[in-house]
Length: 472
Figure (spheres, rainbow, N blue to C red):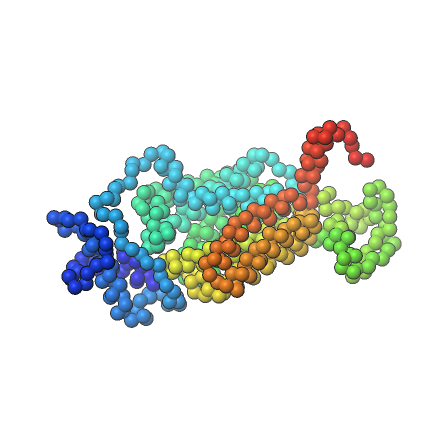
């Protein structure tokens, strides 16, 4: 498809003279000129000639990359303005340059990446501080801005072929590639330094490595394999792990930080029909010794662990040792979320991807594109309603509250799979925009050792004048 990329494609007819018999569909009046510069009438006639030549070209010779289906391409019209109406870009000022830098950094995307990194920070049981939060957010934003800048430098020749991306700064020549490279390198060095000295070397390595993975692996892979979407999902799933490691917690199990799995809540035993039996073991609960009751078929511990050295019941809220399973749960959550989010968006702009010869599932296999969206939308349910509470980071109430936005996402993905059209794809995309922030906020609200409940209790007591009362 790269051989038929609009008016400025390879097969464009330059300098051809229209014959009187061909006529033109241009309804306006072309400006009269004494020089040889092209008029709007001539531009449109050249485009008609190019389309006629393309229709006579064998289908096998129209596409320079195999494997792309014959999907309708968007019509790329010649310029509607008179060539003399175009003006040079205004002189760069500090404010205009700042706006260009925001475009290079893809500001909205970088802000979203930064917000997801704070989730891992909030779920860590280790102490937090305001300087740590500022270092994490600043370093994450800068490394994300550098990755997006390098991405646009590599893709600028292809962005020029697609109307959707023709207004980007490098394509429009508002800034040179050398200037953009200096900006990206500066952001990478500053971001890595902030993460290294403000957080720790592990977080800095994750941030720089994620930038390299995005710019050097994901970006060129888009032209060769549909696996680029899976690589991009890994890139988007790493920021929460950066927030977790910023507190000093590890992502790999060690003797000091082993993997811990907490059981189902005790009240689920009756719902699941699981009977309990008394054992000879005694535990201390609220200062009282009692016989430990164990289920017959499983061993739930009410989101708690047992210290077998002295038989003491330790609730999950009292365990301050980080569980390496928590960051990987966040990784899986962000990894799966990106497929219904990106696949629905790529379906809407699949013609633009085809014009740039990007190998996306929405271009090469539309049905599989919807199947992958549905599959990962379903995986969000066990990740949030089963694995996340079993890590001990969130309570089992999170399993119920998170099922609502995840269920809506699954329903939209099902509709997209049943009826693949722009309407169902747009609905799935808009649901994905609010579903992720809601789920991430719920993880912080239902954090096991969260102080939200205590804060609300203190606020309620101060509002009702009962701040002096203490629970017995």
